[in-house]
Image 1: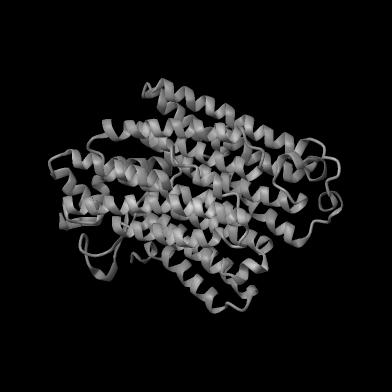
Image 2: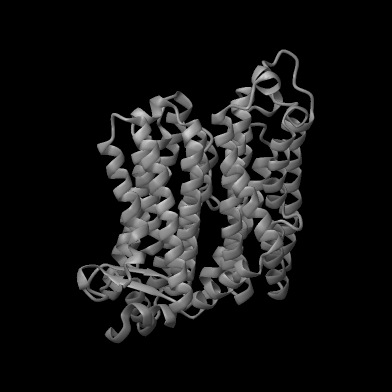
Length: 502
Protein backbone atom coordinates (compact mmCIF):
# COMPACT_ATOMS: atom_id res chain seq x y z
CA UNK A 1 0.00 0.00 0.00
CA UNK A 2 1.36 3.42 -0.98
CA UNK A 3 -1.81 5.43 -0.53
CA UNK A 4 -0.18 7.45 2.26
CA UNK A 5 1.67 9.50 -0.37
CA UNK A 6 -1.64 10.65 -1.92
CA UNK A 7 -3.53 11.35 1.29
CA UNK A 8 -1.82 14.72 2.10
CA UNK A 9 -3.21 16.00 -1.22
CA UNK A 10 -6.61 14.30 -1.10
CA UNK A 11 -7.45 15.31 2.49
CA UNK A 12 -7.31 19.11 2.05
CA UNK A 13 -9.08 18.85 -1.32
CA UNK A 14 -11.86 16.82 0.30
CA UNK A 15 -12.00 19.15 3.31
CA UNK A 16 -12.22 22.17 1.05
CA UNK A 17 -15.06 20.57 -0.91
CA UNK A 18 -16.96 19.81 2.29
CA UNK A 19 -16.45 23.41 3.42
CA UNK A 20 -18.00 24.60 0.17
CA UNK A 21 -20.98 22.28 0.74
CA UNK A 22 -21.31 23.79 4.25
CA UNK A 23 -21.13 27.33 2.81
CA UNK A 24 -24.02 28.69 4.90
CA UNK A 25 -22.64 27.49 8.24
CA UNK A 26 -19.49 29.19 9.52
CA UNK A 27 -19.39 26.88 12.52
CA UNK A 28 -19.46 23.76 10.33
CA UNK A 29 -16.65 25.16 8.16
CA UNK A 30 -14.51 25.91 11.23
CA UNK A 31 -14.95 22.39 12.59
CA UNK A 32 -14.34 20.80 9.18
CA UNK A 33 -11.18 22.87 8.75
CA UNK A 34 -9.86 21.86 12.16
CA UNK A 35 -10.75 18.18 11.65
CA UNK A 36 -9.27 18.17 8.14
CA UNK A 37 -6.04 19.78 9.36
CA UNK A 38 -5.67 17.24 12.17
CA UNK A 39 -6.28 14.42 9.68
CA UNK A 40 -3.70 15.94 7.33
CA UNK A 41 -1.16 15.98 10.16
CA UNK A 42 -1.91 12.34 11.00
CA UNK A 43 -1.56 11.27 7.35
CA UNK A 44 1.71 13.19 6.97
CA UNK A 45 3.17 11.47 10.06
CA UNK A 46 2.14 8.12 8.54
CA UNK A 47 3.97 9.08 5.35
CA UNK A 48 7.08 10.12 7.30
CA UNK A 49 7.05 6.78 9.14
CA UNK A 50 6.84 4.90 5.83
CA UNK A 51 9.74 6.91 4.40
CA UNK A 52 11.84 6.22 7.50
CA UNK A 53 11.21 2.48 6.98
CA UNK A 54 11.63 2.21 3.20
CA UNK A 55 13.52 5.33 2.06
CA UNK A 56 11.03 6.29 -0.66
CA UNK A 57 7.28 5.89 -1.12
CA UNK A 58 6.09 5.92 -4.75
CA UNK A 59 2.57 5.80 -6.20
CA UNK A 60 1.70 5.56 -9.90
CA UNK A 61 -1.63 7.23 -10.62
CA UNK A 62 -3.95 4.95 -12.59
CA UNK A 63 -1.29 2.20 -12.51
CA UNK A 64 0.58 3.95 -15.34
CA UNK A 65 4.19 3.24 -14.47
CA UNK A 66 6.81 5.99 -14.74
CA UNK A 67 7.76 7.74 -16.91
CA UNK A 68 4.41 7.50 -18.78
CA UNK A 69 1.91 8.29 -16.02
CA UNK A 70 1.69 10.77 -13.18
CA UNK A 71 3.90 9.77 -10.27
CA UNK A 72 3.70 10.80 -6.65
CA UNK A 73 6.91 10.25 -4.70
CA UNK A 74 8.06 11.04 -1.18
CA UNK A 75 11.67 10.93 -0.04
CA UNK A 76 12.79 12.22 3.33
CA UNK A 77 12.81 15.89 2.25
CA UNK A 78 9.30 15.63 0.77
CA UNK A 79 7.98 13.80 3.85
CA UNK A 80 9.51 16.36 6.24
CA UNK A 81 7.93 19.22 4.29
CA UNK A 82 4.52 17.53 4.32
CA UNK A 83 4.68 16.96 8.10
CA UNK A 84 5.52 20.63 8.58
CA UNK A 85 2.59 21.51 6.30
CA UNK A 86 0.30 19.44 8.54
CA UNK A 87 1.66 21.10 11.69
CA UNK A 88 1.16 24.60 10.30
CA UNK A 89 -2.32 23.66 9.05
CA UNK A 90 -3.38 22.66 12.57
CA UNK A 91 -1.81 25.78 14.11
CA UNK A 92 -3.56 28.07 11.63
CA UNK A 93 -6.89 26.21 11.93
CA UNK A 94 -6.91 26.69 15.71
CA UNK A 95 -5.80 30.34 15.44
CA UNK A 96 -8.43 31.02 12.79
CA UNK A 97 -11.20 29.92 15.18
CA UNK A 98 -10.50 33.13 17.09
CA UNK A 99 -9.13 35.45 14.43
CA UNK A 100 -11.05 34.88 11.18
CA UNK A 101 -13.80 37.44 10.70
CA UNK A 102 -17.28 36.46 9.61
CA UNK A 103 -16.85 38.53 6.46
CA UNK A 104 -13.79 36.50 5.47
CA UNK A 105 -15.59 33.26 6.26
CA UNK A 106 -18.49 34.26 4.03
CA UNK A 107 -16.09 34.81 1.13
CA UNK A 108 -14.54 31.35 1.27
CA UNK A 109 -11.73 31.68 3.82
CA UNK A 110 -11.71 28.00 4.80
CA UNK A 111 -12.11 26.41 1.32
CA UNK A 112 -9.32 28.66 -0.01
CA UNK A 113 -7.08 27.76 2.90
CA UNK A 114 -7.60 24.05 2.21
CA UNK A 115 -6.98 24.55 -1.52
CA UNK A 116 -3.71 26.28 -0.66
CA UNK A 117 -2.69 23.36 1.59
CA UNK A 118 -3.46 20.90 -1.23
CA UNK A 119 -1.26 22.94 -3.59
CA UNK A 120 1.59 23.00 -1.09
CA UNK A 121 1.41 19.25 -0.41
CA UNK A 122 1.09 18.49 -4.14
CA UNK A 123 4.25 20.51 -4.85
CA UNK A 124 6.19 18.54 -2.26
CA UNK A 125 5.02 15.14 -3.47
CA UNK A 126 4.83 15.30 -7.25
CA UNK A 127 7.46 13.45 -9.27
CA UNK A 128 6.55 15.25 -12.49
CA UNK A 129 7.93 18.66 -13.45
CA UNK A 130 4.75 19.76 -15.26
CA UNK A 131 2.58 18.77 -12.32
CA UNK A 132 4.87 20.85 -10.14
CA UNK A 133 3.88 23.80 -12.34
CA UNK A 134 0.19 22.88 -11.97
CA UNK A 135 0.44 22.78 -8.17
CA UNK A 136 2.26 26.13 -8.23
CA UNK A 137 -0.69 27.61 -10.09
CA UNK A 138 -3.16 26.09 -7.63
CA UNK A 139 -1.22 27.79 -4.82
CA UNK A 140 -1.11 31.07 -6.72
CA UNK A 141 -4.88 31.14 -7.27
CA UNK A 142 -5.66 30.27 -3.65
CA UNK A 143 -3.08 32.64 -2.17
CA UNK A 144 -4.17 35.57 -4.37
CA UNK A 145 -7.80 35.08 -3.30
CA UNK A 146 -6.77 34.86 0.36
CA UNK A 147 -4.67 38.02 0.07
CA UNK A 148 -7.52 40.15 -1.21
CA UNK A 149 -10.05 38.95 1.38
CA UNK A 150 -11.43 42.17 2.84
CA UNK A 151 -10.76 44.23 -0.27
CA UNK A 152 -8.79 47.01 1.41
CA UNK A 153 -6.61 49.26 -0.75
CA UNK A 154 -3.32 48.08 0.82
CA UNK A 155 -4.35 44.49 0.23
CA UNK A 156 -5.12 45.12 -3.43
CA UNK A 157 -1.79 46.88 -3.97
CA UNK A 158 0.09 44.06 -2.26
CA UNK A 159 -1.84 41.39 -4.12
CA UNK A 160 -1.15 43.01 -7.51
CA UNK A 161 2.61 43.03 -6.85
CA UNK A 162 2.38 39.47 -5.54
CA UNK A 163 0.50 38.07 -8.50
CA UNK A 164 2.48 40.03 -11.12
CA UNK A 165 5.88 38.69 -10.03
CA UNK A 166 4.50 35.19 -9.52
CA UNK A 167 2.94 35.18 -12.99
CA UNK A 168 6.33 36.20 -14.38
CA UNK A 169 7.84 33.28 -12.48
CA UNK A 170 5.18 30.92 -13.86
CA UNK A 171 5.85 32.09 -17.43
CA UNK A 172 9.59 31.48 -17.08
CA UNK A 173 8.92 28.12 -15.40
CA UNK A 174 6.58 26.98 -18.17
CA UNK A 175 9.01 28.09 -20.89
CA UNK A 176 11.82 26.18 -19.17
CA UNK A 177 9.64 23.06 -19.01
CA UNK A 178 8.94 23.35 -22.75
CA UNK A 179 12.64 23.66 -23.58
CA UNK A 180 13.51 20.78 -21.29
CA UNK A 181 10.83 18.56 -22.81
CA UNK A 182 12.14 19.39 -26.28
CA UNK A 183 15.61 18.33 -25.15
CA UNK A 184 14.83 15.03 -23.38
CA UNK A 185 11.24 14.17 -24.35
CA UNK A 186 9.94 13.45 -20.86
CA UNK A 187 8.39 15.28 -17.91
CA UNK A 188 9.08 12.76 -15.16
CA UNK A 189 11.83 14.24 -13.00
CA UNK A 190 13.64 10.95 -12.41
CA UNK A 191 13.55 10.20 -16.15
CA UNK A 192 14.75 13.72 -16.96
CA UNK A 193 17.71 13.18 -14.61
CA UNK A 194 18.63 9.93 -16.40
CA UNK A 195 18.31 11.30 -19.94
CA UNK A 196 20.02 14.59 -19.16
CA UNK A 197 22.91 12.65 -17.61
CA UNK A 198 23.28 10.55 -20.77
CA UNK A 199 22.97 13.50 -23.15
CA UNK A 200 25.93 15.52 -24.31
CA UNK A 201 26.24 18.58 -22.14
CA UNK A 202 25.47 21.71 -24.12
CA UNK A 203 25.00 25.36 -23.36
CA UNK A 204 21.25 24.86 -23.65
CA UNK A 205 21.24 22.84 -20.41
CA UNK A 206 22.83 25.76 -18.58
CA UNK A 207 20.29 28.15 -20.11
CA UNK A 208 17.41 25.97 -18.89
CA UNK A 209 19.04 25.63 -15.46
CA UNK A 210 19.25 29.41 -15.14
CA UNK A 211 15.58 29.73 -16.17
CA UNK A 212 14.60 27.31 -13.39
CA UNK A 213 16.84 29.22 -11.00
CA UNK A 214 15.09 32.50 -11.81
CA UNK A 215 11.58 31.00 -11.70
CA UNK A 216 12.06 29.23 -8.38
CA UNK A 217 14.15 32.13 -7.04
CA UNK A 218 11.15 34.43 -7.50
CA UNK A 219 8.89 31.91 -5.74
CA UNK A 220 11.40 31.67 -2.89
CA UNK A 221 11.72 35.48 -2.67
CA UNK A 222 15.45 35.42 -3.40
CA UNK A 223 17.55 38.40 -4.55
CA UNK A 224 16.89 40.41 -6.71
CA UNK A 225 13.16 39.72 -7.25
CA UNK A 226 12.01 39.45 -3.65
CA UNK A 227 10.26 42.80 -3.22
CA UNK A 228 6.81 41.33 -3.86
CA UNK A 229 7.01 39.58 -0.48
CA UNK A 230 7.45 42.51 1.96
CA UNK A 231 4.96 44.45 -0.19
CA UNK A 232 2.22 41.86 0.23
CA UNK A 233 2.61 39.55 3.24
CA UNK A 234 1.73 42.22 5.80
CA UNK A 235 -1.53 43.20 4.09
CA UNK A 236 -3.66 40.06 4.52
CA UNK A 237 -5.42 38.60 7.58
CA UNK A 238 -2.80 37.64 10.15
CA UNK A 239 -3.49 33.89 9.99
CA UNK A 240 -3.04 34.04 6.21
CA UNK A 241 0.21 36.00 6.61
CA UNK A 242 1.45 33.40 9.08
CA UNK A 243 0.68 30.51 6.74
CA UNK A 244 2.32 32.31 3.81
CA UNK A 245 5.36 33.16 5.93
CA UNK A 246 5.79 29.59 7.06
CA UNK A 247 5.11 27.62 3.90
CA UNK A 248 4.82 29.49 0.59
CA UNK A 249 8.40 30.64 0.10
CA UNK A 250 9.62 27.23 1.29
CA UNK A 251 7.93 25.64 -1.72
CA UNK A 252 10.28 27.67 -3.92
CA UNK A 253 13.25 26.65 -1.76
CA UNK A 254 12.14 23.01 -1.93
CA UNK A 255 11.91 23.20 -5.73
CA UNK A 256 15.45 24.61 -5.90
CA UNK A 257 16.75 21.81 -3.67
CA UNK A 258 14.92 19.22 -5.82
CA UNK A 259 15.97 20.27 -9.30
CA UNK A 260 19.53 21.34 -8.45
CA UNK A 261 20.33 18.04 -6.74
CA UNK A 262 18.37 15.68 -9.00
CA UNK A 263 18.37 17.24 -12.49
CA UNK A 264 20.94 20.03 -12.85
CA UNK A 265 23.86 18.50 -10.98
CA UNK A 266 26.25 18.02 -13.91
CA UNK A 267 27.78 21.51 -13.87
CA UNK A 268 27.71 22.68 -10.23
CA UNK A 269 30.66 25.05 -10.75
CA UNK A 270 28.30 27.19 -12.87
CA UNK A 271 24.87 26.82 -11.27
CA UNK A 272 25.95 26.68 -7.64
CA UNK A 273 28.21 29.69 -8.06
CA UNK A 274 25.13 31.63 -9.17
CA UNK A 275 23.26 30.22 -6.17
CA UNK A 276 26.07 31.35 -3.86
CA UNK A 277 25.81 34.95 -5.06
CA UNK A 278 22.04 34.81 -4.86
CA UNK A 279 22.15 33.43 -1.31
CA UNK A 280 24.65 36.04 -0.12
CA UNK A 281 22.78 39.03 -1.51
CA UNK A 282 19.43 37.63 -0.31
CA UNK A 283 20.72 37.37 3.26
CA UNK A 284 22.20 40.85 3.22
CA UNK A 285 19.44 42.83 1.51
CA UNK A 286 16.71 41.11 3.52
CA UNK A 287 18.19 41.91 6.90
CA UNK A 288 19.05 45.52 5.91
CA UNK A 289 15.45 45.98 4.82
CA UNK A 290 14.23 44.63 8.16
CA UNK A 291 16.53 46.96 10.10
CA UNK A 292 14.96 49.98 8.38
CA UNK A 293 11.31 49.07 9.09
CA UNK A 294 9.02 50.06 11.99
CA UNK A 295 5.96 47.97 11.12
CA UNK A 296 5.78 44.64 12.95
CA UNK A 297 4.81 42.39 10.06
CA UNK A 298 6.99 44.20 7.50
CA UNK A 299 10.05 43.57 9.68
CA UNK A 300 9.11 39.89 9.88
CA UNK A 301 8.52 39.82 6.10
CA UNK A 302 11.98 41.20 5.34
CA UNK A 303 13.41 38.63 7.71
CA UNK A 304 11.81 35.86 5.64
CA UNK A 305 13.87 37.12 2.70
CA UNK A 306 17.01 37.23 4.79
CA UNK A 307 16.56 33.72 6.20
CA UNK A 308 15.83 32.27 2.76
CA UNK A 309 19.42 33.26 2.00
CA UNK A 310 20.74 30.87 4.68
CA UNK A 311 18.76 27.98 3.16
CA UNK A 312 20.05 28.76 -0.33
CA UNK A 313 23.56 28.99 1.08
CA UNK A 314 23.26 25.37 2.21
CA UNK A 315 22.34 24.32 -1.34
CA UNK A 316 24.98 26.55 -2.93
CA UNK A 317 27.86 25.11 -0.88
CA UNK A 318 26.66 21.66 -1.98
CA UNK A 319 28.54 19.61 0.60
CA UNK A 320 26.88 16.91 2.75
CA UNK A 321 27.06 19.10 5.88
CA UNK A 322 25.76 22.16 4.01
CA UNK A 323 22.75 20.25 2.67
CA UNK A 324 22.06 18.96 6.20
CA UNK A 325 22.22 22.55 7.39
CA UNK A 326 19.89 23.75 4.65
CA UNK A 327 17.24 21.12 5.44
CA UNK A 328 17.59 21.73 9.21
CA UNK A 329 17.22 25.47 8.59
CA UNK A 330 14.02 24.96 6.60
CA UNK A 331 12.45 22.92 9.40
CA UNK A 332 13.41 25.43 12.10
CA UNK A 333 12.37 28.47 10.09
CA UNK A 334 8.88 27.29 9.13
CA UNK A 335 7.99 26.84 12.82
CA UNK A 336 9.64 30.02 14.08
CA UNK A 337 8.41 32.38 11.39
CA UNK A 338 4.81 31.16 11.55
CA UNK A 339 4.88 31.68 15.31
CA UNK A 340 6.22 35.24 15.09
CA UNK A 341 3.42 36.25 12.74
CA UNK A 342 0.84 34.66 15.05
CA UNK A 343 2.25 36.65 17.99
CA UNK A 344 2.01 39.85 15.95
CA UNK A 345 -1.69 39.07 15.54
CA UNK A 346 -2.17 38.81 19.31
CA UNK A 347 -0.38 42.14 19.78
CA UNK A 348 -2.71 43.67 17.19
CA UNK A 349 -5.71 42.20 19.03
CA UNK A 350 -4.53 43.90 22.25
CA UNK A 351 -3.53 47.33 20.92
CA UNK A 352 -5.05 47.58 17.45
CA UNK A 353 -1.91 48.40 15.46
CA UNK A 354 1.27 46.90 13.98
CA UNK A 355 3.16 50.23 14.12
CA UNK A 356 6.07 49.83 16.54
CA UNK A 357 6.01 53.53 17.46
CA UNK A 358 2.41 53.23 18.66
CA UNK A 359 3.01 50.04 20.65
CA UNK A 360 4.49 49.40 24.10
CA UNK A 361 3.88 48.28 27.65
CA UNK A 362 3.08 44.67 26.84
CA UNK A 363 5.76 43.12 29.10
CA UNK A 364 4.26 44.82 32.15
CA UNK A 365 0.69 43.83 31.32
CA UNK A 366 1.24 40.46 29.57
CA UNK A 367 4.61 38.97 30.63
CA UNK A 368 3.71 35.49 29.35
CA UNK A 369 3.16 36.81 25.82
CA UNK A 370 6.45 38.69 26.03
CA UNK A 371 8.34 35.51 26.92
CA UNK A 372 6.52 33.59 24.19
CA UNK A 373 7.80 36.21 21.72
CA UNK A 374 11.37 35.87 22.95
CA UNK A 375 11.50 32.13 22.18
CA UNK A 376 11.03 32.37 18.38
CA UNK A 377 12.69 35.81 18.19
CA UNK A 378 15.94 34.66 19.79
CA UNK A 379 15.75 31.42 17.85
CA UNK A 380 15.52 33.39 14.61
CA UNK A 381 18.58 35.37 15.68
CA UNK A 382 20.44 32.11 16.32
CA UNK A 383 20.95 32.20 20.09
CA UNK A 384 21.59 28.93 21.98
CA UNK A 385 20.03 26.63 23.00
CA UNK A 386 17.18 27.33 20.59
CA UNK A 387 16.63 25.66 17.20
CA UNK A 388 18.03 28.58 15.22
CA UNK A 389 21.41 28.29 16.90
CA UNK A 390 21.97 24.77 15.59
CA UNK A 391 20.59 25.65 12.15
CA UNK A 392 23.00 28.58 11.82
CA UNK A 393 25.88 26.67 13.43
CA UNK A 394 25.65 23.86 10.85
CA UNK A 395 25.54 26.33 7.95
CA UNK A 396 28.46 28.38 9.32
CA UNK A 397 30.55 25.28 9.95
CA UNK A 398 29.82 24.02 6.44
CA UNK A 399 30.93 27.39 5.06
CA UNK A 400 34.20 27.26 7.01
CA UNK A 401 34.89 23.67 5.90
CA UNK A 402 34.28 24.77 2.29
CA UNK A 403 36.69 27.71 2.76
CA UNK A 404 33.88 30.10 1.78
CA UNK A 405 35.20 32.76 4.12
CA UNK A 406 33.49 35.85 2.67
CA UNK A 407 29.98 34.41 2.57
CA UNK A 408 30.48 32.83 5.99
CA UNK A 409 31.50 36.19 7.40
CA UNK A 410 28.41 37.80 5.84
CA UNK A 411 26.22 35.05 7.33
CA UNK A 412 27.63 35.85 10.79
CA UNK A 413 27.07 39.59 10.23
CA UNK A 414 23.48 38.94 9.13
CA UNK A 415 22.95 36.95 12.34
CA UNK A 416 23.99 40.00 14.39
CA UNK A 417 21.72 42.31 12.39
CA UNK A 418 18.85 39.84 12.87
CA UNK A 419 19.45 40.00 16.62
CA UNK A 420 19.36 43.81 16.41
CA UNK A 421 15.97 43.69 14.64
CA UNK A 422 14.50 41.31 17.19
CA UNK A 423 15.78 43.49 20.06
CA UNK A 424 14.20 46.50 18.34
CA UNK A 425 10.81 44.78 18.26
CA UNK A 426 11.20 43.69 21.88
CA UNK A 427 12.18 47.18 23.04
CA UNK A 428 9.44 48.97 21.09
CA UNK A 429 6.54 46.56 21.53
CA UNK A 430 7.12 44.86 24.86
CA UNK A 431 9.56 46.86 27.01
CA UNK A 432 8.98 50.59 26.51
CA UNK A 433 6.03 52.39 28.09
CA UNK A 434 2.83 52.63 26.15
CA UNK A 435 2.72 55.96 24.26
CA UNK A 436 0.47 58.65 25.74
CA UNK A 437 -3.06 58.65 24.39
CA UNK A 438 -3.05 55.01 23.28
CA UNK A 439 -6.21 53.06 24.03
CA UNK A 440 -4.94 50.36 26.42
CA UNK A 441 -8.34 49.04 27.51
CA UNK A 442 -7.87 45.58 26.01
CA UNK A 443 -4.24 45.35 27.13
CA UNK A 444 -4.46 46.49 30.75
CA UNK A 445 -8.07 46.12 31.72
CA UNK A 446 -9.33 43.54 29.26
CA UNK A 447 -9.90 39.99 30.47
CA UNK A 448 -8.30 37.07 28.73
CA UNK A 449 -11.25 35.92 26.68
CA UNK A 450 -11.79 32.46 25.23
CA UNK A 451 -10.92 33.67 21.74
CA UNK A 452 -7.65 35.19 22.99
CA UNK A 453 -6.80 31.91 24.73
CA UNK A 454 -7.38 30.10 21.44
CA UNK A 455 -4.89 32.45 19.78
CA UNK A 456 -2.35 31.56 22.47
CA UNK A 457 -2.68 27.78 21.95
CA UNK A 458 -0.73 27.46 18.67
CA UNK A 459 1.78 30.06 19.84
CA UNK A 460 2.56 27.98 22.95
CA UNK A 461 2.75 24.73 20.93
CA UNK A 462 5.07 26.19 18.29
CA UNK A 463 7.28 27.75 20.96
CA UNK A 464 7.42 24.27 22.54
CA UNK A 465 8.54 22.82 19.18
CA UNK A 466 11.31 25.43 18.98
CA UNK A 467 12.52 24.55 22.47
CA UNK A 468 12.27 20.81 21.76
CA UNK A 469 14.42 21.09 18.63
CA UNK A 470 16.92 23.22 20.53
CA UNK A 471 17.18 20.91 23.53
CA UNK A 472 16.73 17.60 21.72
CA UNK A 473 17.93 18.20 18.18
CA UNK A 474 19.49 14.81 17.45
CA UNK A 475 16.35 13.19 15.89
CA UNK A 476 15.80 16.28 13.74
CA UNK A 477 19.46 16.29 12.71
CA UNK A 478 19.23 12.58 11.84
CA UNK A 479 16.27 13.23 9.53
CA UNK A 480 18.10 16.16 7.91
CA UNK A 481 21.15 13.91 7.47
CA UNK A 482 19.07 11.17 5.81
CA UNK A 483 17.49 13.79 3.58
CA UNK A 484 20.91 15.15 2.55
CA UNK A 485 22.14 11.62 1.82
CA UNK A 486 19.21 11.01 -0.52
CA UNK A 487 19.56 14.41 -2.23
CA UNK A 488 23.27 13.95 -2.88
CA UNK A 489 22.77 10.43 -4.25
CA UNK A 490 19.95 10.88 -6.83
CA UNK A 491 20.29 7.24 -7.94
CA UNK A 492 18.14 6.24 -4.95
CA UNK A 493 15.31 8.53 -6.09
CA UNK A 494 15.67 7.43 -9.72
CA UNK A 495 15.69 3.73 -8.80
CA UNK A 496 12.63 4.16 -6.57
CA UNK A 497 10.63 5.98 -9.27
CA UNK A 498 11.72 4.20 -12.44
CA UNK A 499 12.52 0.78 -11.02
CA UNK A 500 12.95 -1.57 -13.94
CA UNK A 501 11.95 1.05 -16.48
CA UNK A 502 15.54 2.34 -16.83
